[in-house]
Length: 428
Image 1: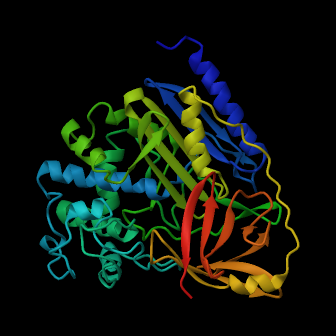
Image 2 (image 1 turned 90 degrees about the vertical axis):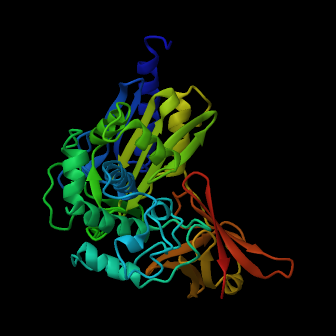
């Protein structure tokens, strides 16, 4: 049994932690933390809209990115339980002309083991596609591997799931979620976003550039059916979390199958505690929801700021709740050192992420300066040594070029957001 003042002490610790980040311009958003069915902290930090001096609150609406996938997965489980489809069904049963559809099951799509690539190649321009048009884009993509043999995180797979939901239910994806999940659970501030939708309490997305906060481009996400096109609030996501403890909106058996197979979610191990968790990102927004079911602990944060230390927060907030050691956020300011720019010639080329071969970027040299170019976006890399670089004085991200025994640059290790390492192989 926790002492009576445990929740208030925990709330004060979390509040101090988030305030420290906010004061360093490393967090803007809303946080909700609960334990044993009681809200420990529910609070907004920073501005939902800087132009109009509107602060964030627990009622502020944020884009939630890939947190959307768990609702797509739940919709599938609802249809599975009702007998309208089975997770063992193949795609070909619903789309007879789908390439390799006889090999790909709904389970494969839910677990990112279908062989579909990460992205379908959606247009970035503000044009609205139907789910059928999105599926045509997905159909045109070759498989990365034989279904069921590997795993590759795939937004395209979840976009295909949205279409299967429509085929099996006879209802538009957004309407099915609203009627069968959001409305029954009282999630009145959750739904499918679009470029033109007017939302009360909507947060604008921001980033940090050249020592100041800037407003980011309002990204076209409507076509990301099933994979990342929803908006919500921390309060609505808490309603979702609490409903799951009551066997809603599907039976406990179907729910167990969903979470044990990691449909739309992943596993998050912190110390001795195992959580069911998901994170999401859209341009200018980050989202995180973790449920430590055995401890009856819930952690939710939604942000309207790009440069948040996501992984650090994912580890530190549970540590606070579980009474473990953690470090308070510290101010970061990094300084570049002078090196011979001829060294940059060894680093230039094309790099491919080891975890996702479809994701490539370039390192280029211009006017004795080094830049990383990713999907048309260019950021300068500043040297801390002859191998270690950073992209901004107040960023934790580190880019380390690795050489082999022949002194050839073979890869780059990217350390991001509090300790997450990505390896990118140099291919050209």
